[in-house]
Each structure stands twice: as structure tokens, then as C-alpha cells.
Amino acid sequence: MNPLFGLGQALMLSLDPERAHMLTIKSLEMGLYPRCDAPDDARLSQTLCGLDFPNPIGIAPGFDKNARVVTALFNMGFGFVEVGTLTPRPQEGNPLPRVFRSVEDRAVVNGLGFNNEGQAAALERLRRGVPGIVGVNLGANRDSEDKVADYAAGVARMAPVASYLTVNISSPNTPGLRDLQAPKELARLLTSVEQARAALPGNKPPLFVKLAPDLADGDLPEIVGIIQGSGADGIIVSNTTLAREGLTDDALIAAKGGVSGRPLFERSTRMLARVYRLTAGTMPLIGVGGIDSAETALAKIEAGASLIQMYTGLVFEGPDLIHLIKHRLVQAVSEARANSLAPLIGRRAEEWALKTL
Picture 1 (cartoon, rainbow, N blue to C red):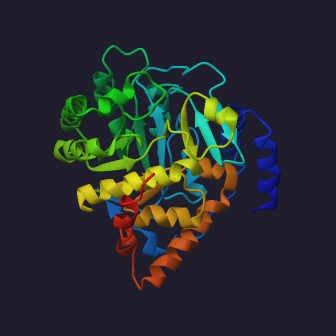
Picture 2 (cartoon, helix red, strand yellow; picture 1 turned 45 degrees about the horizontal axis):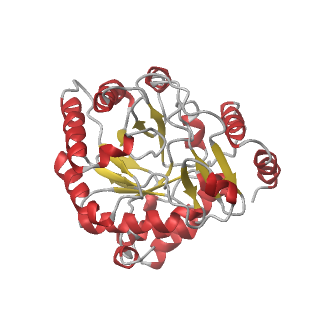
């Protein structure tokens, strides 16, 4: 670990989590971050949904909610950036305190509730131009009377600046949001969203659907089938979990919100593998949840992810994690005597899918 990061990390971990996050964003805006100047190994590159990813490592939404530090994140070595979650109108989110962390558990519980400056503010920033692939994570306002209409409006508004769009219906912190994962509601939502995308006069970005890790195994085939039949381009697995297994910190166990970090890894990776099996590897999957080492990143890819995203792991392990993951993935490609990540994707999906929680 970089000694300077070690000092900064100790400071940040002594602060309230939200304050630490705000200071991190401010530091990136000021240019105070480690830069990755070395070009990516060509074997890490992929073309998915018509987009050329230089490497498979992305920053998950929630870090740069308002598209304030996109360029800085690319300079740190990420292959793509997903901003948001963005709602049609600005909103403050849930009451404080709403973020809790445990160093011992390598976990965070967040009950933020889509706090953001609204789509218009992010749209203005992204219009200035970005140096890479930027996904836009879309949500619905808490007080919206028609959440489906919020997603359709987000597609229409944000498509001109989005490399891809994510329909986030899996946050546990907005009342009623996860109800949109129910088959009938999901079909209605995706029909509306696809109609909005089809009506776009110009850029029609790929569409991903982000699922919760708490879906029942028996519901997954129908849900995945609806997504595949809707015209969506990919699936993101997964959001935070309401489960508390793997937590030992009583404060986090009692806290209201979704768990991210190490305790989420097994649950989200198992679900990822099951989605990969259901799609027979025909749909790009983004694996998220509990990546805090090079080995957990590789495991996500072996379970079926073409791309991966992380956030909480960086809180505890620091930005060196990006380089460590790239190095391990290149090593794994070499060990497989391959020229790309393709032979690694899903090679242990069956093993992961059969795991029990």
C-alpha cells in the first residue's frame, strides 16, 4: 500500500463515512489522487454492446453520484465509470445518520436513499465531455407517483451523454422500488423504458438492468427471461443486500440499509453464476459485490462476469487495488494460454451456482 494512502486512509476511517466520502470527492476534484499512466494490457480489452472497454474494472455507482470526478477516475486506471444513481429531480435522501462502516467486517451499510443533485446537474457536467465509457445509473424519486415514468424520463434525458444506461430497481432504500422486480411490474417497466429508448432521435445507448441479491432462487428464471425478452442488453448483479450474514459488528447488524463489502461477496457471486447459467453466457453481465482483492475480482469473472465494478473494497484497500486486479487478470490470461479474458468468463459458473448460502 502507498504510504501516503495509508495515512489518508487512517484519517478517512476516523471520520463519519459520509464526510469521508465528500472529502474524497473534493480531493479528486483538486487532482489529489494517484494516476495510472501505464497503458492497459491489450488482453484485458473487450468490445461489448458496441463499446470498447480497455479493461474490465469499473467504479460502481454511488461513488460519483453527481458526475463530478469522472475524468479523475479514468486517470486512476478504471476501464469505465458508472455515475448516479440519478433521479429526475434532486432529492436529499433519507435522514442522517445513514451510512455505517466496520473495518473488522470490511463492510458498509448504507441507507442513503438516492441522494443526488438530479439529472439536470449531471447532464450539464457530462456534456462537457468525458475520456471514456460512462454509464448512467437511473432511479426514481422517492415521492414519485409514477416510478415507471421516472425511468422512461431518465432514458430520454440522459441518453445523449450516456455510453450505457442502467435501470436501478434494486436499491433497498427507496420504499416500493424493489417491487418493480416482480415479473408483472418488471415487464411493464421495461416495456416503457424500451419505448423511450426506441423514440430517441440520436444515440440509443445499451441498457442494463440491475438486480438485488435477495431475489428468491425460484423467481430468478422468470425475471431473467423477462429481461432477455425485453430488448435489454445486459444485467448487473448485484446491488446491496438486506441480509446480515457475515457481519459481526452489532451496530451494522442493527443499522437500516443495504450491506456492501466482503459479506456480500458469496451471495452476489452465487447469484451472478446463476444468472450466467440462465442466459447461457449470451448476455453481458457486470459482477458487483464484495470485490476487495485480485482473487475476488477474478472469481467474479470466472462466475460469469464480463465486467466488474467495485466501491466498498476501495474504502478499505485503497486505489492500489485497481493495479493489483489488472496484474492478476493478465496473469490468469497467461496461465490459460489465452489472448483475452474470454476463456476465463464463466469457467467456474457451475461451481458457484451450486453453492448454498
